[in-house]
Amino acid sequence: MDPVPASGLATPLTRHAGIRVPLIGGAMYPCSNPELVAAVSKAGGIGIIQPIALTYVHKREYRAGVREIVAAAGGAPVGLNALIEASSRTYHERMVRWVQVALEEGVRFFVTSLGNPRWVVDAVAPHGGVVYHDVTERKWALKGRDGGVHGLIAVNDRAGGHTGGRSAHALLEELGDLELPVVAAGGVGSGAQFADMLAMGYAGVQIGTRLIATHECTADAHYKQAIVQASERDIVLTERLTGVPVSVLRTPYVERLGTGVGPIARAMFRGRKTKHWIRTWYALRSLRQLKRAAQGAARADYWQAGKSVGTITGIVSVAAVVGECESAARQRLVQSPEARASRL
Image (tube, rainbow, N blue to C red; front, side):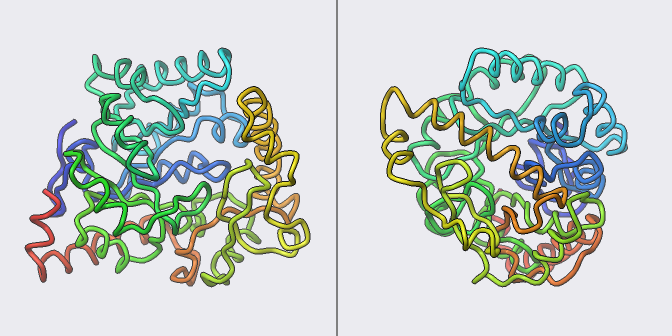
């Protein structure tokens, strides 16, 4: 994809995605509404379509929804999140079709997670597509590299939703020798934190929680205010959504229900024959719960968020978020040219 180097923040991510600011608007279920995704791209980063949120939560026919977002982005690049875990033949076939439709509608940047990305890499290669892969540790990064991905998104222990177990610094050290650009994901809610990640050596930053507390996000107002009012101490990990740790805001509902799964469910997750069934059951249940929570139908329910809440003090526009990140990064790189050189 063609680079857009006008901001002076050129990195492998900006070149791969064809963007001005090395910022990915993370795909969020259920919060990635079309207006939010398009706004990130229009502001100079790249917004990522979350196809289940697009169709199930925001009620768009898939192709029409992709077209709506691409048009609203005004010619700026838009990406797609391809969830590639082969939980069923039907699901895989639907995801293959979604990737193909996205390619037909001009999408060239793809973020994969939860599986082997090889089929996505092969599908987008004839169109000049680029694939970045979500990882939480080296063994998944190696599988992504062997699957032919062009970059890695390193999900750290400060991320919202499905979180990692390592710090941003430790992850970069762990993945830095794989000769792939690495994007930081987790814990960035301010321009200063964005600049810190680039100065550390990351090729870009994926942002999620900060984008929920924006005007363009259509999540329930109570959810947004909870993010604004929260501190890092209000973030807890719960296994009761998907069976693996998910980072959420502490609410009376979460405290009442607890954060761990029961002994029967835990045993099923360990079983070779039962883990697929229990994962599917938890996934279907969590889709319903998260959708209801984001739409305000269950205001004491699960609200996903990361530890960046500590720096989020108000609801602003997406353009203001991206602009703050761009400005802070440019100032930092002017002061520290060696940091800029480490990312190129």
